[in-house]
Amino acid sequence: TQKRLVSPSVTRDVVTRHGFQFKKSLGQNFLIDGNILDKIVEAAELDENAGALEIGPGIGTLTQELCEAAKQVVAVEKDGRLLGVLRETLSDYDNVHIEHNDVLEANLHEIFAQHFEGVSEVSVVANLPYYVTTPIVMKLLEEKLPLRNIVVMVQREVAERMAAKPGGKEYGTLSIAVQYWTEPQLVTRVPESAFMPAPNVESTVIKLKVRKEPAVQVKDTDLFFHLVKASFAQRRKTLLNNLQSNLQPKRDKETILAALDRAGIDPTRRGETLSLDEYAKLADELAE
Ligand code: SAM
Image (tube, rainbow, N blue to C red):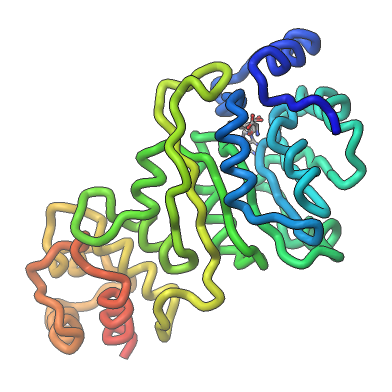
């Protein structure tokens, strides 16, 4: 077993030796808190048959622990300057593949086919770059990869939006998309001091347990998500107003009112008060 990279002194040493300059635009805040690292790896529930997909390995701090805990690890890193660093810091491991790419451009199905053939289940485990958190999580969900769970460090507000229940201002399209595909669970809050350099936002580790079946059954998934998007287009407007102006394809007022009536939903309510079940019911009435 190699020396853990997670300590501040080891991280500083690696970074200095390679003349590496942190890029804020790539969300480069490296984890230097071993307790938080342990909690992330524990939440992923890996074993010697499991695969782990990491997004943004940095200098390999989390990657190293994933190599110890899982059978096979794939880490997708956009920054080419880190490839030489990773070659050095992960030299003890033969169960890791570094994919040099922007994760949003990467063909994840192909990566799974090439590298996760002999593994039982795959978890995504990552300390995400915050400027692209939502697109990354949406990609993981919408591509319907065979995932067991997704354990990610995100900005605290984003974690709260993912786990939000109806009725509050955090509840929105991200909450519904995440909860449609997964069961979210907050793992731990993380202070700024856990990173080098310290970001100016608080972070949270969240675990998204991927559901075998979506949380609600609908006739038309695209319509369901269009309905949700339209319902939140202008948060202060009523459901009826939002649906009249934003639903695609357009429906007239009578059609919308009739569907709301059949679904048992008051047209003066706001989008943020509807549960996933209510959105599902309404989507099915609009599909008729
Ligand atoms: N995993 C390391 C750790 O915990 O210390 C680094 C985490 S750092 C918050 C985010 C990492 O994601 C950086 O290494 C950054 O270069 C990388 N990254 C940024 N944008 C990316 C993208 N679009 N695709 C893949 N990696 C990206």
